Length: 163
Image (cartoon, rainbow, N blue to C red):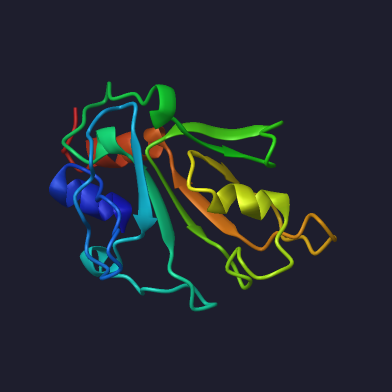
């Protein structure tokens, strides 16, 4: 849905920050900024909740919420990254335009909540993705997906929207 939106509009949507499912304005278009909130499900024509009745969360690099080019590159605090744990000992992806995640059955607020789930819920630019765990202190049931620069650029070029 994000790629389809980008192909149609030449940009990624801003998050829904009011809870109505419609994309709201991003406060900045700087490559050094990101905006988070709910996935704008009405705007994207998607379900509004994950299987556990939690809103899908969404964080986007603001440089991609306006018309972008193949040379658009996030920097500084605009760099969204996905790691294998909360210490980011192993980097899975960096400089991603957008991250969508589900906080799982516990909603990242009901115990038990592991440190990796806490990282996903802290509203910053680092996310954790790994297999389910019910080990005490390391509980993890979040589902994290990200849109890479390469995939987004490939789909935009294939659709004739870039270079």
